Length: 215
Image 1 (cartoon, helix red, strand yellow):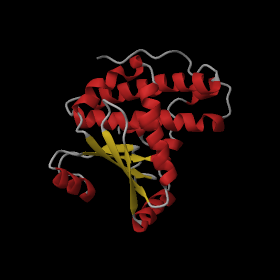
Image 2: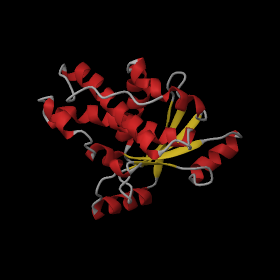
Image 3: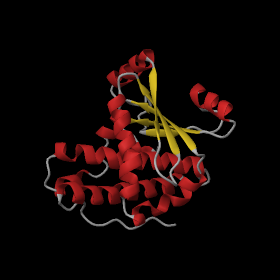
């Protein structure tokens, strides 16, 4: 992700990542409905809860958002392979909330899957604790009048989807500029938060409705 999607990383976060690597990883296959690609979530052993949260956001929250909110990513999703590996990490040492992994830079897991399946498999990574800590619109959150803790789950759902779709766009449309891609994912986050906060808390989110991204 770009500079706006970076956070400061404490050395403890790096140490946590090293410990998770030592513990090993587990996998969870997410089967959403059409037209979304399958996801294979690879996560640190003992972190099934965060994998389930990501599954709920992708397989249940994303499909129920308004068609207008999902519209900017219809083309992106159509261009992706039928399977995407998502490496879930607590934090990235660089501070980014996610990365897309170009062909040739994938993990051993993804390369093995592609070989066994005989077809292309894409890969991204997401920093789940980084996404929890990310606050792109603090004034909009304050304007709801809701305690920050009550919005935490909603923020994670919108945030993990925004970062995921951002990285999906880099995979599917490598010619898109970072500024254009970031504008789309920031707009998506705003719209998703408006919908989810209204649905779950019955209050208005945001200072004003954002303008839609350019097609």
